[in-house]
Image (cartoon, rainbow, N blue to C red; front, side, top):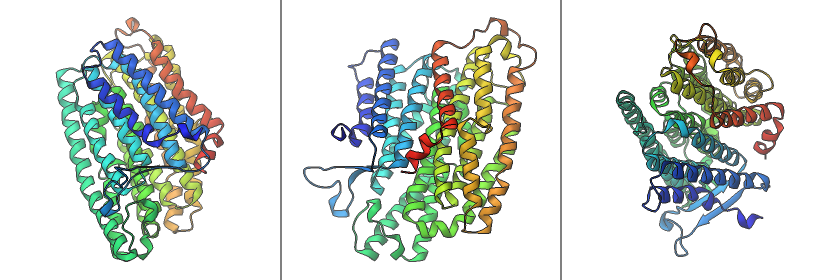
Length: 494
């Protein structure tokens, strides 16, 4: 079966589909484009699942150009590798893009060809980030991801003029922050590549060929800080987070699902691949500092979240807080916390997709996301209310749902860390996340769904079949991984 599993095919198929959709070959008919895109996303998801079914060891692949490496004189290769963690995140990517494409039916009202073309291009870039086995190839996909993300955040897909104006500003802010981080990341990669050659005589950018232990301590520290700035923008780490609430709030709902469900995970994955694995000695040295930054993410942002009144901003700020828990797990530098961090990336990705889907449904029906205006939605939309209750309970870490497992395992892994007493205290102080998240999520649930019905609410219809499929799929994933966590932990541990 391995002959049918090709990492380049997995990565570049969405890019090819993107070109097909935007080309004159594809009709401008909305229904045809949408159905073609959903079919392609479904195939991509099923193909990714084949890697899970037949996975027994890391897959590697390399593309040669006329028998030579990509930039042979510098040891830079077009090399790909799928291990357990990149496999899990690739599957999450395929699933999130699939449900986002299904949810696009009622959220995208114009420029369908351009929209779906950018979706596939973004998917290709993200899969490239998760599977790159070469530092410069990783950076290539990292930069490529900015192009479709910019157009998806700020594009004209049927919003009002005011909404489109805010979206464009949010897209520009996203680009500026990401480009700022990318400059530091490129500096770190160049220094790491050069000093690896100077210290070890190894002219290679492949991750496995980097021997950081022989590089001077000061250079390792400088490289690690540069990379952390680059990845910290995308994670994001406070104070490099201010682009995220604007981008998540002003983008159309399917794009918000992708930004929160997948894009933030590229920052965490970069920290894992570069700082945690390649520069492990320095990472262990600065782990207590990262734990403190993670606590700031968790607690400070949770307090800010409680003050928000826009549903999307509540979800956006809560994503920053939850990604702080992922960073805290990485900082613990032990297997339990690492596995829990990856588990939390998956569970958080599912939860935020569900929450943004609910926010989008509410906005389509009521034309507002202000929790001070909304009320009594449960009376006119009982099915949406049922999904909202379950997904909100999952988000606050109620047992039987995936976030409960990931949060508990992360805190246990951090408290068992032998690196520093700071890590143990961080694990204790991270516990308020469970309480703080309950406060703002239950506030959102009660304000919007309970109470007297909003004027005109009787005329609002309940969720459609498309919306039911999306929310049902997300809820199923949260329950499966919550009740049978070893189904995911077994893959991550591999």
